[in-house]
Amino acid sequence: MFRVSRVSPVRMKSVTTPHRPSRAGSRRAATSRSTVGRDVILLSLGTLVALVAWLYLVRAAIHFGANARDGQHAAWALMTLAIVGAIACLFIGLMLLSELVRLLSHRRGNTPPPPSGGKRAAR
Image (cartoon, rainbow, N blue to C red; front, top):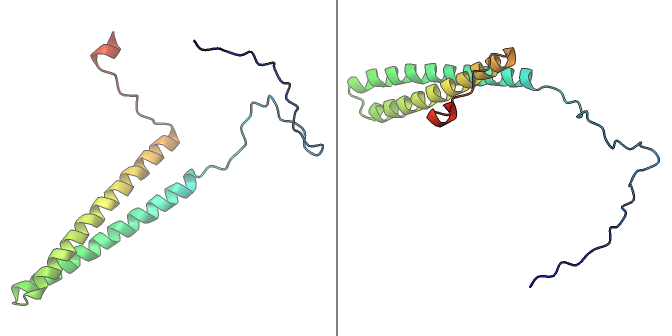
């Protein structure tokens, strides 16, 4: 039904330049700089910015709430926006903080054990 044709093996020529030696068979990977230190700094700064923004928005919400209780009806909308922004900043700050803790614990070699696979994996 299907025919398989035999193809003669073709010998491939090596493509090396006379200026660079061939690295065929080399087992070492190219060395790359670790970006863990830079990641720690960026995550720390991001967490700090998010938490400072959260603090500012919480204080603004308190201020707008006091104005709203004094009879300024537009302050209710501003207070609501400040509260939603504060919630978002706190969420982002906590997410960045958890990533920072994970990165620092991985850097020290304190990796958590892999999760078990359940009853079937225990057999």
